[in-house]
Image (cartoon, rainbow, N blue to C red; front, side, top):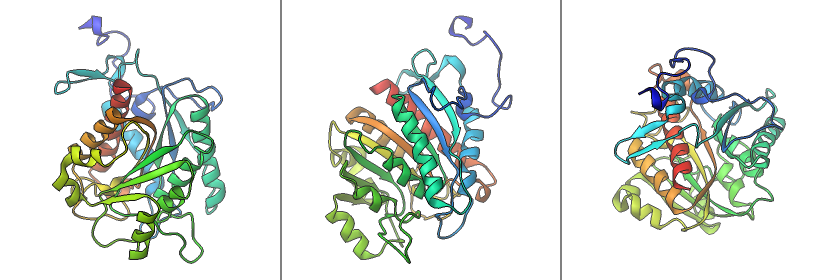
Amino acid sequence: MSGHGYDSGRLNLPFVGLCSFGKYPYQPDWDAIDADFAILGAPFDFGTQFRPGARFGPRGIREASTLFSFGHAGAYDHEDDVTYLENDRVRIVDIGDADIIHTDTIQSHANIEAGVRAILDAGAVPIVLGGDHSVNIPCINAFAGEEPFHLVQIDAHLDFVDERHGVRFGHGNPMRRAAEKDYVTGLSQIGIRNVSSTARDGYEDARAMGSDIQSVRQFREMGVDGMLARIPEGARYYITIDIDGFDPSVAPGTGTPSHGGFLYYEVLELLDGLTKRGSIVGVDLVEVAPDYDPTGSTQTLAAQLLLNLIGRIAHNR
C-alpha cells in the first residue's frame, strides 16, 4: 500500500488540522495562484428575501469537505474504474474568502468579482462557495472579456426577476443579469418547480432571452441523456448550483427549501455528462445555510458534489 502513498507522511485525518476546502493548500496571495482549480468563498447573504444564514455556507462546506480529504492518493470510483483527484494530476488551491462589507451589496459583489478574476487570470477554473444566489452576479461579471459560454443552472427557482422595488442584485435576479450579457449565449434552467418567486412574465422573458426551462419531473421524464441533448454540444459551460435544487429531504439546510427536488445521482450524472459534452469554465454552489440543518447533510452533499465534479472536469478534459 505504501507505494500508493497511503503510509507516507502524516495520517492527517479529516478532523485534524486547519479547515481549507478538501484540506488542499491555502493560497492567500491572489497574485500567486498556481493551480488547475481555485476555491473562493463568497460568504454574502444580504440578497435573501426570506431566511438568512448562507453567509456561513463557505465555512460549512469547507468543514464538510474534510471528510473527503483523500490526500495524494486520490479517490477511486469502482463504477467508473477511475481514480479522481490524484494530487500529481489535479492541482487545487483554496484562496479563502472575498471580503464582505456588511450591508454593502455593490462593494461586496465587487470583491467577489475580483477574486474570480484573479482565478481566471491565473488560468484556473473558479469554484465559488456561496453565499446566496446573488453572488452569481459578480461571478458572471468576472467573465467579461472571456470567450462566450452557455449557463447551466440547477435550482428550484428561476431567479429571473428584473427589478423588484429597485432591487436588481438580490438572489432573485442573477439569471436575468446573466441573460443580459452578450457573452452568455443561452441558459439551461433545470429543476424549476412549484410555487416560484418569479411571476409568469419572468418565465416569458427568460424564454425570449434564450432560456430552456425544465422542471424535475420534466427532467426525469426525458432522462439525463435527454436533458443533455437539449444543451449545446461542444460549448463552454458555466454551472451554477443552488442547493435548493435538491430535495429538502437530502438538503434541508437552505433558506428557501422546495419539495420535489433532485437526488444526488441525478445531478451528478448530469454534471458528469456536461464534462464530457463540453468544457466547464466556472462553477458556483450557493444557498447552503448550515444552521437549518443540524445533521450537516446539506453541506456534506455540497462538498461531495463539488469534489466529484472537480474530479470529473479534470479527468474528462
